[in-house]
Length: 325
Image (cartoon, rainbow, N blue to C red; front, side, top):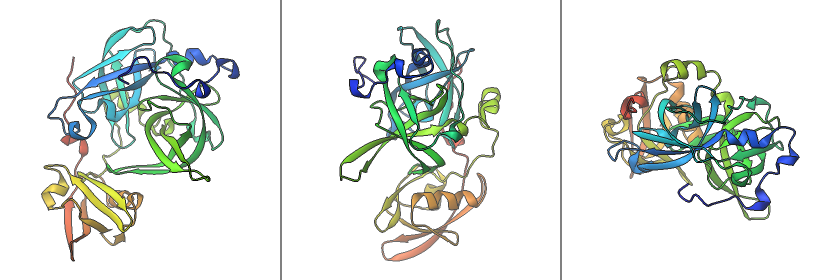
């Protein structure tokens, strides 16, 4: 959000009078976030060194929830309230499995009350939600849930029960998604496009459900990480194509790179499990165990088929850790 003067189109803005709760008070808990990342960070090439989005206050002690890619490997974080108050923050915890992150404010934001976490499992297609960035109703979108379904990302990421909303928020990263009861039910992650029944493009937001956070929140607050065993990480980006799934790129020094996986390799199978889409690929990798598990990949390279065995890793060990302040 580099332009401070933007607003959501009036037709998409929520009218506080239409809600049975204090919508303005809920939206006050959404602040702006800016993170600075060193150029030598692993994620700098794909996510940039200056990242902007939103975060939501979920605890009176200054704990904010946001989407992880905004603060991954960050050196400096700034939080800005709708009243213009700016304080520094610290990336307390990032969970690469869910994609969520906690930011601890290092200063006070007077006049902001934390929001309650809702029950995102009850959210269903057709339900009305508000997706909000910092700035109140003028920077919020009155939306509806269009789907609850799996989402697989090219960066070794899969959610089995993601929330999809429309119309899409124009500045989606880290936005707060508030359910019909005014509680926080998710955090905005992406914008996606699909065609509607009339052949027109429909923009959707993919929202990470709050149900992904609640089981791991105590551990993230106390230890800075989830208490679940780390998932296997290969260090490769993959893409779905008409003929199947292929490797887009590999991270230098990651398991895929060390084993000899190359960009443009087509992934035929993980072990004995055939691969036809991203969701199937990541599920098959996870089925072989936690970080450290051996992952046999059957690949097609040019006119030949080969099998490479990768020793998976914990992705966190390949990321720059946030500086302590």
